[in-house]
Length: 131
Image (cartoon, rainbow, N blue to C red; front, side, top):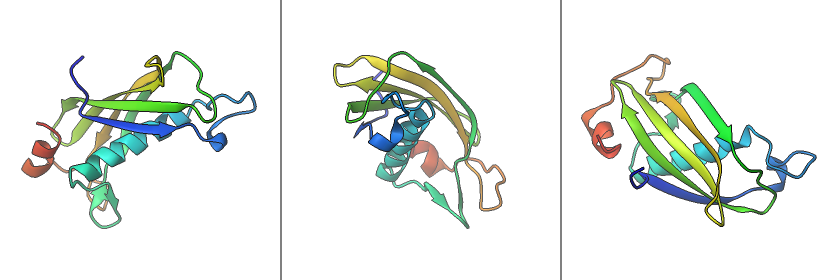
């Protein structure tokens, strides 16, 4: 796979784990979303605004390979695998400190206006997203 569009580093927080001490499965999406939002902000793109809209999810999937525990440092690379008329399909991974893939998935978001209606990506948005 090519170099990621963005790389976000983080750590597994205690509140993100279940009684086993392992990261609870939906938190993979929390870490993806943090990386996605950091990427959008780094490009000067809207994350969310009540009047201007945002990027709701229309598809999400994740495969889990290895458990992560409280305090474990992680690396979350993101790739954009498809730019549609109003949608972006992302690929993400969550790697542990030794580089092992612990989770990987795909998320499709759609650019919507303040009323939740899909709107075409602007030329500036497309360029910022690498298209």
